[in-house]
Amino acid sequence: MDERVKKNMAGLAAAIDYDAELMLRVKRGDDASFGVLLEKHRNPVIHFLYRMVQNPAVAEELAQEVFLRVYRSRASYEPTAKFTTWLFRIATHLALNALRDGKNERKQESLDDTIESQPARQVSDNRPTVEQSMVQQARLGEVKKAIHTLPDKQRAAVLMHKYEEMEYSQIARALNCSESAVKSLLFRAYETLRTRLAHMA
Amino acid sequence: MDYVSGSLNAVDAALFEKHLETCAECLEFVAGQNAVWQALDVFEAPAVSANFDRALHQRIAQTSWWDRIAASITSPFRTPSLLRQGLPLMAAAALLTAALVVWERPNPAPAPAPQAATGQLSAEAGAPDADVSLQPEQMERALDDMDMLREFNHLVISEPAAPPKM
Image 1: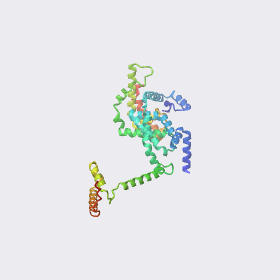
Image 2: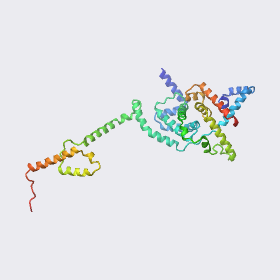
Image 3: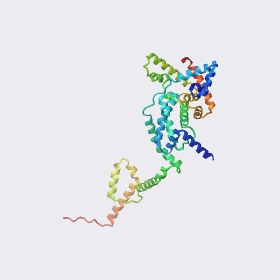
Image 4: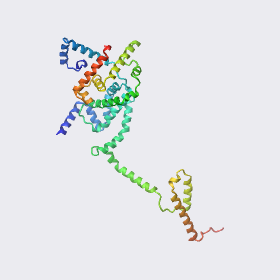
């Protein structure tokens, strides 16, 4: 009986989640579907990881591991949750481990160096003056520092909420905690950011 | 948070906006949250490396062979098993290897022809791994065999037929 309910739920999840359907095809040996999933989720996963560890090389390394794990676990995949939730659960797990092990610190120059090495990426449209560029870079540096100093779980929650537009329930599953815990994490994180970035308003 | 992030539904958003008209505290909170929300927009991620997909597919290709083996072992009844398909081949390879080992093993009682054995020995003595291919006992045995054959030739066969003088 339980097995039947589980199967029905899996089928329902697959029906409402096209990504889950693609993953089921990968499970059946369709590697092209894996390519579709990679194309769709590559950038969000790498961007999330980049904002977590704030190091592009480490972020891509971790993203490779995320997709490798997705591919490796295709045989045992069951669509019990939304595909993106599962994907970000893996990504968050790897990012938190990397942060705990200080992996990003080893490869990272100082935060300031990283900021300097990205010249005017965000202000390239209207040919900003040198002064505008410097202001923009300073703002970016402040934001990165403010996010960097958040506790790891709060950081992950904010990044999933703000940049990936994930729902509380999805974030909760990715972080393996309750929805109310996620709301609490987000509230504290945004309060901290508000205090640290108040001068930028 | 939902209001600032735009995830609040239209009805609730309208109600909240009505509330904001009369609540200075909430208005201040929303203004602060809006400022944070906008500030975070500047944090863009860099472009992804062009070779990301290629590197990933290489890693997948490297591991997939082992994956298939592992999958065959862990779920032999669910998927067409590589292990089962390869079993006859593996058995044949094992038999062939065993046969080669037996073939290569030194015969305990060979009686090599004296000339051939001498040639073999002298050739192998110069080889760098001569000690590996020819054991001292084998040499001793070969020399004994040669002596025995020489003696046998001398005693039993009287005199080899000498070619007639022309």
